[in-house]
Each structure stands twice: as C-alpha cells, then as structure tokens.
Length: 69
Image 1: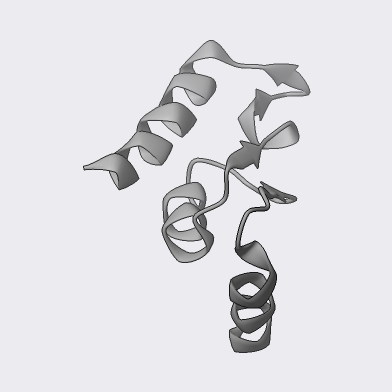
Image 2 (image 1 turned 180 degrees about the horizontal axis):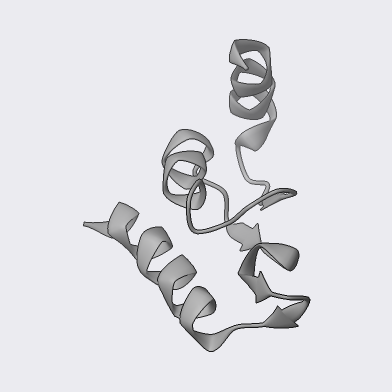
C-alpha cells in the first residue's frame, strides 16, 4: 500500500483519479481518507439482492461525507 501512495503522490499534481473496486459503506470512509480520490465509484457495493438500495446508497454517501468534517 505504501508503494501505491508514493506513486499517487508523485503523479497526482494536476491529475484527477477515481477510486473504484470493492467499495461499500463499510470501507469507503477509510479508503477515501487514505487515498483522497476525486471520485469514488461504487456499483455492487450499494446493492441488496442484486438491486440498488436507496438506504445503502444514502449510508454510503454519509460515510463519504464524514471525511469532509
């Protein structure tokens, strides 16, 4: 993980990046705090039985916004 951060810091300057893959309400807060992406892409991490869940989506958004405080 340290190597990933070194690479991101080296090339980050004026570039934006997307954090994607395996994100869910249970881990997004930590991942966003760790990587500070411009965008957090989520798909199956906000699904319940294969369908998007408004409740899970809202929880995911709350977790992301906790990093803004």
